[in-house]
Amino acid sequence: MSRWDDARREVLEVSQEMWRRGLVSGSAGNASLRLPPLEGRPLLAITPSRKDYQRLTLEQVQVVDFEGEPVEGEMIPSVETMLHVAVYRARPDVAGVIHTHSTYASVLAVVGLELPPILDELVLVTGGPVAVAEYAFSGTEELAERAVRALGERNAVLLRNHGVLGAGASLREALAVCELVERAAQVYVLARLLGSTTSLPAEVPALPAEVIEVEQQLFRMLHGLPPKG
Image (cartoon, rainbow, N blue to C red; front, side, top):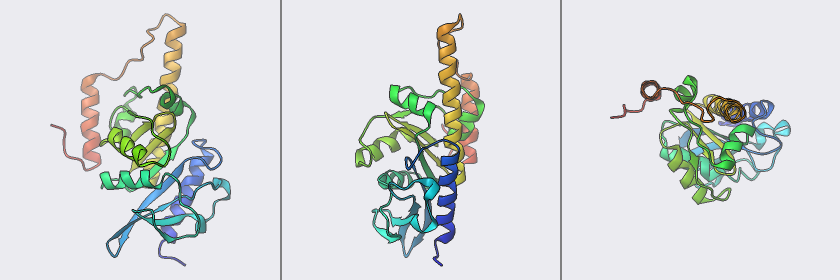
């Protein structure tokens, strides 16, 4: 019995749910949970590298510190560990991070299209449009820096030619963010296609600016962020 068993179980269950919902396949993507510091040493529990989710076990979820050094577990942690750490360092309000390769969101990431605020719930859950971070190779410090920069104070970012990163005050919230981004991306892609094949405008209309502003302020209030001046 480990002091981190409950946290590791949560990472296990949420990562397997991520796989069941079709947001990843095989061993793609990753999930992590911020842990209470150990003697001042910040920690996280994270999925291991190259392990299929349907075969993942509690013991294979790794506990590492913010330098990527192992604390508990004998497997190699996700190659994107430092991406998760960068988000936790930049965003004290975030306790859970999930990286997915869902289809429609990845389409937008590949072509470099920002996901605009086309649905009310998208603004309330992510904080506004989902920006695209510039491309950088997986597992690099450059990717972590670019992702955090594009994420800002919102809860989701598209990783160019890669996929999605979702953040939340809990791991379940991060999963909900990734799922909503995928659904909104599907709506957006289909709406653009419909516009290109009918007499409808090809450009997909966003919510009214005043609605977006109100919903962004509500997002900030719900997540303990200061009002935007």
